[in-house]
Image 1 (cartoon, helix red, strand yellow):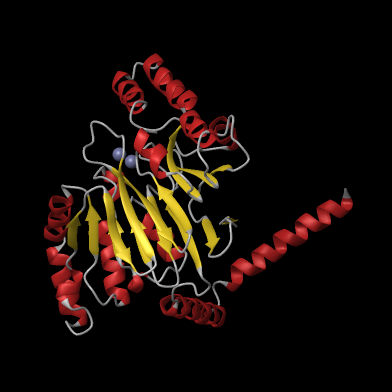
Image 2 (spheres, rainbow, N blue to C red):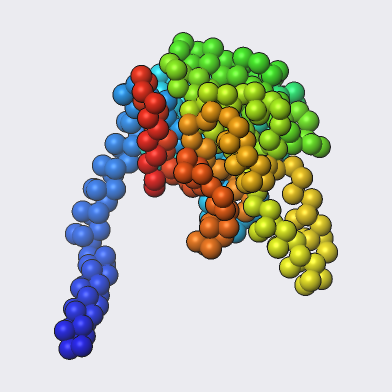
Length: 347
Ligand SMILES: [Zn+2]
Ligand SMILES: [Zn+2]
């Protein structure tokens, strides 16, 4: 007992000394040097060199926010490629936090235009523009993408003018701050060297059109569902995929929330909760999908809701096969070329 008290008191004294040192200019200057080195290293970072298809979870949550996880965003990288699928709220923080070289970004692929998939389009545009992206940022998406991109460009026109004027047009060329768009149809939408992106029709009614994407690179592949039920198109596109990142809703949790809201007299909230049940894949339906398809690994993202605690995580994972997991912000999947390995790197 006496020993424990001595240890606790010592730790408190150490914490107090550390906190006091924050007030010393010499200590502050040392910390600034370290901070500056980290900033420079991050700005100079390039795409990963070893030959692999890499998938980074820059947003794992849905609008049903019960945690601080970002909304839908998945980045796909190879030594030569960098595409981002959706750009939900909070995702830019994860992209910069991971030190992804945004000046190398080649495009954003939108699955549809719900706010939780487009909220940080301009943040991604701005960050990559400042980092020195050499071409305008291209936004791919189904019909309607032009309306979204034109509105973002118009809404931030003044922001671009201020920044170009402040830093100089040579450093921030105005034309590179304006998003471009490209309307896509289901089928192959990008063939970029060894990387192919194929769009497929998602089941997210009444949202039309909505798509998911399959990305193939040197024999490795990832399917990203966006918001979708499991449909015949899903079953077709996942055949032989190494990794499937799928939208997932926990029916027991959302049903319970809807009933709790009704019991509390919150009829509007209860109705909205029960409405979302029909346009996201239930976790059970994605488990069933995996039982009938040859998929290497399945990671649930766009979690409805993102679990606020371990108990809800466990409810979400009911009936999970061993190759299933819940994605979280900051998670990496590494799929080396010439192998079947899928390495999961947790944040
Ligand atoms: Zn949606
Ligand atoms: Zn969504």
